[in-house]
Image (cartoon, rainbow, N blue to C red; front, side):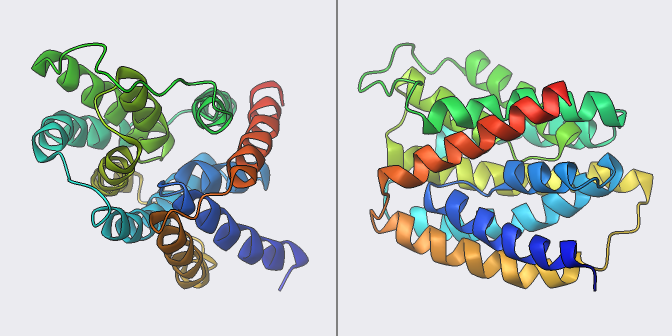
Amino acid sequence: MENWEYFLYLLMPVAAFMYAAVGHGGASSYLMILALMGFAPQEIRPSALILNVFVSLISFLNYRKAAIFPMRLFLTLVIFSIPAAYLGGRILLDATMYKQVLGVLLLFPVLRFAGIFPVSSQPKFAQQPWMVALLGGSIGLLSGMIGIGGGIILSPILLLLGWLGVKETAAVSALFIFVNSIAGFFGASVFQVELSPQLWVLIPLTMAGGALGAYLGAKKWRPKFLTYLLAFILAFAAVKLIFG
């Protein structure tokens, strides 16, 4: 086994732990790690989405107990995001553009974790159906194209609009990530890419890291240093992916 494989087996569970602790599935971190380690986009997307399905489900099962789940908002989002994520999964970007788009999307969690996105205590706009539909569809399309679940984009927007509180946002984002990851994976499967054997070792390791992080995060264990550390790591990775 190559030395980089041991490094991969360490990084992925740690990324899952850190992301799940703040209510995310972690696909963006998996994508970041795999992209920086030289994996091809057509192999990165399905691998990250499979991992994301498991970790986001674990995160949702923990966070749904900590808040009242806004079912109406969630259903309106996913009715439009699921077909859009499937369609996005069928779009394959070239390697350079893929890394640049991923780098730009990583700026969303950077701003969120750095506390730059404000959290509104009062709704700034009423939840108009067309607004929710547009939000779900656009995020779903990007999710499928890049191989994320969309929570890194959805959660700061929900908090900024004041539609949900922090715990409710975490629960909605986790389940949103879960369903979009499944839709994106089936869309990407049209390319019939054979997944790396390392994936089947990474799944249980990443699930374990995500389960521990989600449990601690749902129990209000959320030290500030963790969010700032994530912001720093993702900012560094975003710059490297955008500018090479």
